[in-house]
Image (cartoon, rainbow, N blue to C red; front, side, top):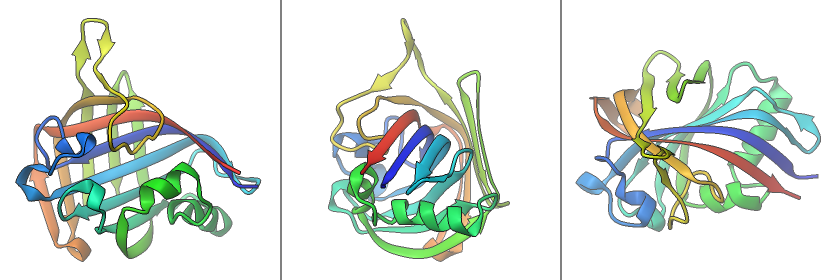
Length: 200
């Protein structure tokens, strides 16, 4: 039956503004270390409702994003049942094909999969993501003369087929010993977006 997932994206990384990865250039500082989180407002996987849940990754990208070899720790919302968690992992490990599989084929090594409390909020254009007690970011979009500044038709996207809203992370913290990362920074790249992922 496949999947249909609709929701919102929050993403932050240690590149400057704007992150070169989105246009296929090498990341600032030669590597990109990121949190990417997809919150499913409504959706189902093989007929199983997964609405209201969030999937996230912390990732170390060792060079140009299009060359892959990402090392990631994957997180599934601890509010999910075992069946929901398994269904979401089947999507986000690329097992059910579609646009998510096209994205996650860039992952070279899933270092760990963890169940964790995930807070995902978007209010008045400002986003908050927290995973457990050691990973968090506060994001806000840039505003242009006609609304939120956007990227579209880029070489790379974590919301394939949809525009991305570019912005700044006023705060970004990530302690992830499994990836050798300890980040505490302000004023770096942030992305928000909406997605509709479908595969039959």
